[in-house]
Image (cartoon, rainbow, N blue to C red; front, side, top):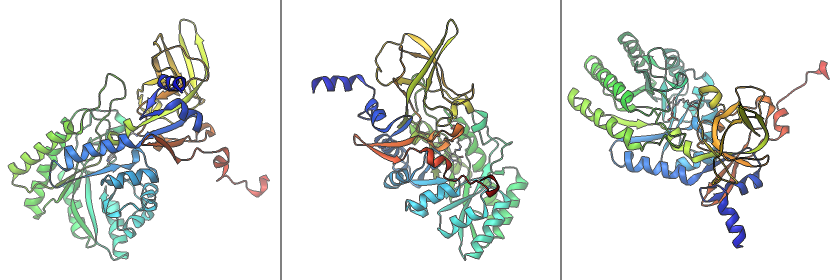
Length: 434
Ligand code: LLP
């Protein structure tokens, strides 16, 4: 027994579980998600935001990672849910998530998606553009409902992050432009839409932000807008949703900031601006995704081929890659990793962790400092909880990995690993080819 215990201690332990044993039991590649970490993040949001400031709400941005079990965790933590598609909405409905706490985003919601939202009495629809406003009014009228909406506005504030995930700048596909004509037109249209009730505004500046400055700049702009609308239309802004985007650390020298780093100055600025302009401070809503789930996940891979090009580079290939984590190829995202069966071994060289897809760009980590490894070793890539499973594809017809939730030291499969049969389950052969 003592020997077994020693052996376990030698492996990489994630949330009290031996990751090598997990790889053995469930196979690789494997997404592993810690319920404890998700819950501790939610409780930090309660303590440092919801309980600290009155009239505040938080919703989890489900695009980061969504499954039925995740809906249950978020529901029990008392948070709302942000969805951006019929598929995410359907997942929430199927998990019996309280619909009043669901917010629907997106720059091109379809008629069917909006209808699904309206007929399920979703909490808020964040209207992105004029076309949506008209379609939504039609659907709400058809179903004899008054739908509560926010306008997503594009505040003209760039987020300091990768171009692909910055959304608040003027040249963005998202939201109603902040310039006067667009906002006034949107306002006139909503006043002429008896089945819609405008509650306030939403903006989202970008994702993986490490700086609170851009939120403050956007708040300055939006509170001025609130003041204009009050003077012009006697409109009171009841709600202001400031989006998500709080960054997390992906490498050991980049630390995740506490939620207070963002929300304290944001709240102070909103209160000051509202006082200054004689406005009632609206209910403030945040919708973090990555900050809640990013650090709660790791991905386990098995190391296969190892190619050493003398004086050039060593490629260590794993049994997954771009299809289960497209972020390095898409954004140049950087990850760190440990050899799960020898986490404390001396890091004696640098090597490049390659995925198994047929793309030279399928590299998970360039120049990782690591110990010598051999085929069959297990690699744990860290902080893969957000935008990995949710962005996974079947490129090269690789079945998607399963997801195992760690809950109080026990593993539970919350998404089954795909099988080859799943890959062809929707295929059809026309008669003339049979
Ligand atoms: N709210 C809205 C309206 C959003 O568009 C997003 C993210 C969020 C909230 C949540 O952002 P977060 O707190 O997770 O940063 N696939 C990219 C991230 C795209 C984020 C898009 N919108 C990535 O892997 O980095």
